[in-house]
Length: 151
Image 1: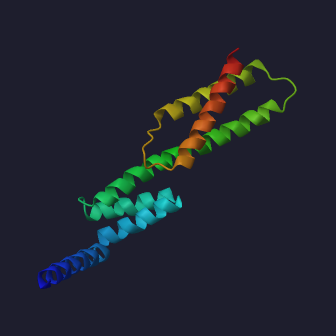
Image 2 (image 1 turned 90 degrees about the vertical axis):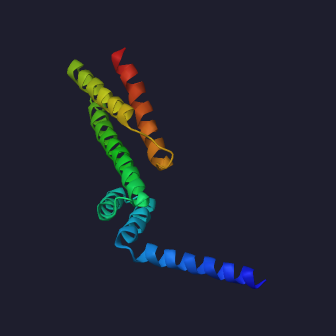
C-alpha cells in the first residue's frame, strides 16, 4: 500500500513540476495565449503570438501548430472579405436597368478571381467550420453567377 502512495506522490510531483515549467517558460506561455486567441477567432493576434513563441523555442509544437492554423484561417478570412467586396460590387452593377457587355465581363472576371482563390485554400481538420462553410457558400454563389453570366 505504501508503494502505491509513494508512486502516486511521485506522479503528482512530476506533473506539478512539468506544469510549472510549462506555465513559466515564456515560449509555452505565449503559445497558450496564442491558442486562446485562436479559439476566440482572433487569428492575426494568434499568429503573431505563435510566431513569437516559435522563435523562442523551435521545438514548441503547440506554437508551430497554432501558427500554421492561424495562417490558414487568415487566408480564409481574407478570401471571405474579398468575396464580400466583389459581391457588393456585383450587386451595385445589378441595380442598373441595363447591364452592359463590359459590366458582364467585369462580373465574369470577379467570379473567376473568387473561384480561383477558393481553389487555393488549404482546409484542415482544425480550421473553424464557420470559416470553411462561409468560404464554400461564397464559392458556390460565384460559380452559379459565373454560369449565368457566361450563357
